[in-house]
Amino acid sequence: MTDLEALYRDLHSHPELSFAEHRTAGLVAEHLRALGLDVTTGIGRTGAVGVLTNGEGPTVLLRADMDALPVKEDTGLAWASTQTATDHTGATVPVMHACGHDIHITCLIGAVEAMAASRDEWTGTLIALFQPAEEHGGGARVMVDDGLYEKIPTPDVVLGQHVTSLPAGMLGAHSGAAMAAVDTMEVTLHGRGGHGSRPETTIDPVVMAAATVMRLQTVVSREIAPKDTAVVTVGSLHAGSASNIIAADATLGISVRSFSEEVRGRVLGAVDRIITAEATASGAPVAPTVEFDVQYPVTVNEPAATARTTAAFAAEFGEDRLFDPGALSGSEDVGILATAAGVPLVYWILGGADPAVVAAAQAAGSVDTDIPSNHSPHFAPLAQPTIDTGVRALVVAAREWLGSRG
Ligand code: ZN
Ligand code: ZN
Image (cartoon, rainbow, N blue to C red; front, side, top):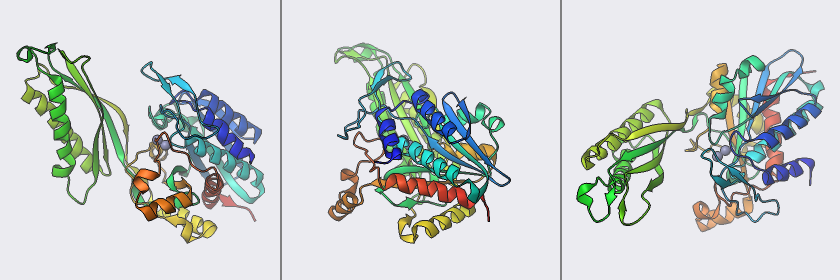
């Protein structure tokens, strides 16, 4: 086992929730300082950034996110997490690196090691940015608002990667709109509570919620053109406490994904209209309350920069290790780091699943059920060749954008 694999196992068994990445950021800062970088911690609460200045030349920012998720790990790995933590609502929750951000941290540390060891081959400034709170809390925006680009140099390009359940050793990049915008909201439907035996004295928020959930299914199927894509998911629904009580209100947690501002506006408008109209149809005493939570823009890979970076990947890995995954319905806030600097973003996906297992599932037509996706309690990327591939991809991409010596 290499030092990087040991680091990966250590990170995996010590996951931390969004904005609680204290141990992780401390470890990262220690590694970066040992490699001779100028390190700033506490940017955007728990963010850590290292700068490696190496003469005149372009400035390249490599980004890794650090946070884990409130998921109870069920991978069976020897180094599986058994940790719990207090979440933003005060509840005690299990914690797991179920999105592979531990892989991202490990790969970026490995890339910085390689870049520090090859200083005589390149020129410019390398920034290694370790972002908090990608999953919950909008860490990229918080870092920018905390004066990120006053504390570190403004980059010429922002580069990063995300591990997925595609075969390990593969790299995927999609030019243009690559990942969806997300808008999440908590909706409270207000009814009037009372005795379960006397519905005539109440306005039942459970029925109101049920009607709203069903009607929301028509937004994508009936209001969005077949050529466009959107997702409306009601991920949580809470109401009531006992069968003989009609509750006073119900809450829905809704997330909306879209790939263009036009579709985004259309879907959000329809969601708002349906929530309001179903409340009216039920005779609700007051209009529903809508509170927006995480909102990330579309992740856009700048086409020229993407072509330049993927050409470098093709030269390093060969065309057969590259593919175009198309636009992904997941969302990311990495684009905010590029937009705030006014520079291009190139963000690619890194395969992490066992290629033999993926091939068997493909043959059986059972990829969707047999290969755990990100955020699954079973998500367990293979350490290798995932880490080696991720390190090399970051180094190749950074070297493509930095100056070279000799
Ligand atoms: Zn995630
Ligand atoms: Zn993630």
